[in-house]
Amino acid sequence: MKRGVYFEVYLDSLFILQLIMNLLLLSLVNCMMKQRVSKRRLFYGALGAASLSVILLLLPVTVFLSMSIGMFLNAVLMGVITFRINQWTIFLKFLEKLSVGTLLLGGLSLLILKVLPKGTDTLMGLTIVLTVMGLSFLLVKRLFQRKENHCCRVTLYGTEELELEALIDTGNALREPISGKPVAVLDKKVFDRLFPNYREGFRVVPY
Image 1 (cartoon, rainbow, N blue to C red):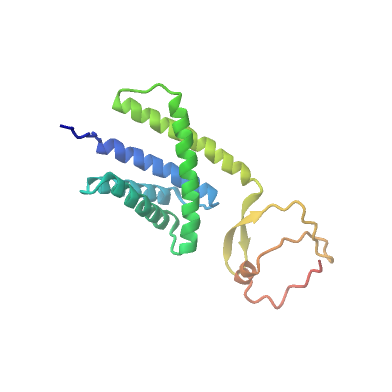
Image 2: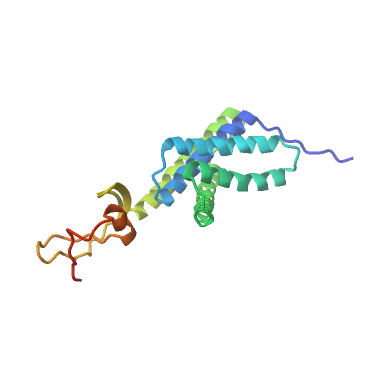
């Protein structure tokens, strides 16, 4: 007679692990999407997804079904709470970054864990996993930050104050012919928001 296989799961350890893992993952996605989301919203998104994971685990469904539903619902929950996503196109972009971050963070963590000694104690094992995840997060985040050195945050003033992501274009040699001052290229939609009545006080710059 075959005996069933039982697994002992500690909900408190699972919740802490999910919370920190979601927090690191959201921080990484925040970096990849070049957003400036507050730490509070990052925490709330991670907290909501971790709570949902524990709740789904308690439901009388199979582990495969619980994980499948949980992955999608967690993505929706984190996207809505953290990044306030309300469009499918933006959600798909978020889902793409979330998948890339999960693969990089999870894969690097597993690689590091293979060379570390396995701890038999639950607390020690949890500490090792969280430490490895933290180190993996720092390595992956540094990788993406290096790719963002050509961008910076700028604040523009007009009829309203706008904070935008700007491209540092060292090859822009455009200058205003009368004053000789350098010219910054601005998107028309942003310009219309800053100066809705721009018929007076502006002149054409030939290029």
